[in-house]
Image (cartoon, rainbow over all chains, first blue to last red):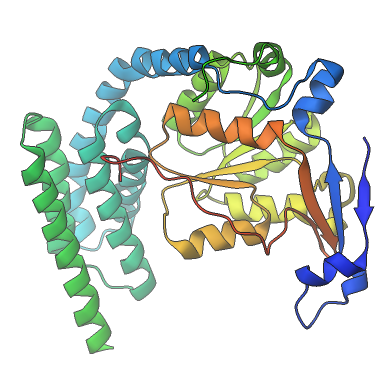
Length: 182
Length: 169
């Protein structure tokens, strides 16, 4: 592998007051494509629409399985929400884990609104992890909203957006009141 | 997107070895399937940062795709260890590390950059986002810095999260 090293003069831009500029070096190495393909590689590598089509077909092929998983996860959220709100740490942890999973995957499979509610719930729980305080009402509203996106899939997106905005405001108000209370 | 794909791409993906570090079984399955649909045959899977470090040392992948939040070791700590210059053969300054995270806040992106993450993708994961990030990470020359305790992408560079298009965000 060919390495080219540039010494301290440029490296000075990288440092803060605690670093000795002479101890910082810039290094440039060939791209992975150059290393793998050698002279066969002609830069730049372009995006291939056929590959993207294959990837999107793959997502579609996994969709049926994911819908089953999502339904099971949402059913579990309904089971967990009450014990989680009553202080059951294990239920709370599992509820977050499921919401985190839904946040990451629902949008990929076309459940964008479900994913956004899960994202909002995760952020509320993460905020609570920092302060040690959670608003149970906010958690319940989120779980209800997540369930609703699956049980009433034809809901007007405007209503979903308004609900999401209302929940965001509730979270913000909750954060402010906790801050004021110290 | 350009109309004419380079002829080298299919052969390139065939030769690429990718390590996926992800605690969600569903997300691991999705990433594995997406990478294979790109023509990548060598996909190694690990469930957390510890497993990722072990797999990295054993398999020497060309690129790492990791989740941010995992237990017991998260993707940030795994990245920090890979970029730590005192870890000898286990360290690597130039392997691209793509982090996929649910956290969009600037503080998380900055923290990821400071540990040595190459690119930061915000969930939900979309096919074009993953594809573009892999192309960007593998097809351009790699620049890194070496300084006491750290060898990796410059922690001073600007790193913006790749965000899904609305309605996903």
